[in-house]
Image 1 (tube, one colour):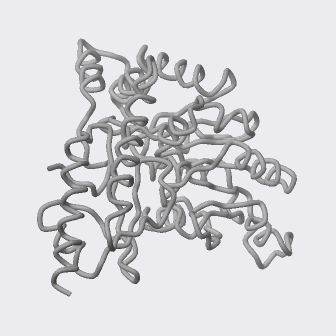
Image 2 (tube, rainbow, N blue to C red):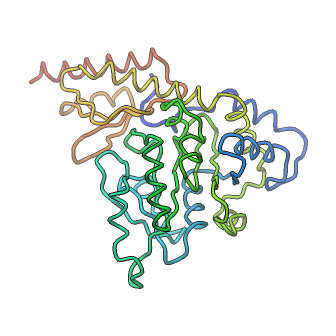
Image 3 (spheres, rainbow, N blue to C red):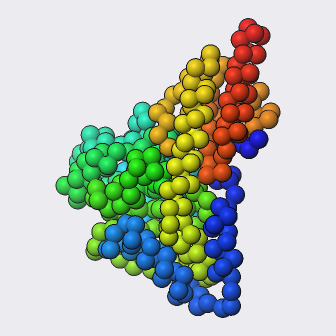
Length: 346
């Protein structure tokens, strides 16, 4: 049985692997001056809008750090949820490497609102305080929830009214868009988002993300910053080939929709198991749950997954593009058996 620890554990989608092999012919100009990169950038414009400007990078942390460096001056900061990946899972890179202060806010479901953002907008202009410049949200969130387009529109309008920009950490943007049944632009460009870190690694790529700017007159010097932030690939065609496979057809959507469906299936199968409590709405490819004491440890003897909150014991189960119905059913049965054994022991 595959684990349910992370969609990063999944392998490369066969279509992506084939695209990499197809690009591995002859020589090509380095550093993105190749036909594959031009084609990938064109596809990103097709999906995000004709004004979209994109820079391919190696990983999500690199995309986020690069975005913050490009959008913020040294005295400016980024507002985000306390649970945001940029805050808790990037080793302090936005601050250590990007030099950008993170201004965090507690949220019950990983989602920001204009009212929450407003808490960091009091006292603007104080020379002793970091000045907010960017609001960064994760779509879908670290808690498996997602923003509706009107929620993002409200955040964008509020940010712009206060002289701020809206950035989307979209490592699982495909999952959110597939779950909403909309295009990538409908949850970004069309609702006023200024910049997107568009993820591919969690959706079947070997490794590749794209920083996409959607607003004119932002991101000055980004070409230089990408190099300085260690995110310029010499053999850029192999990053680009992956995005071509992902975006030229419906692969981005079908892979994400499948992962979402597997998470919904898992949640449905364990929801009524005595002792199991689903703690967050299942709106992407993650299931968060509370289990009876000792059950998680017993399950981890055969299946790998993470405890999300060590203080409460809340666990996270992630599904991937290659998770099968049989694997979900087998894991759900294992959860039911472990819970039943715990009840019997008590």
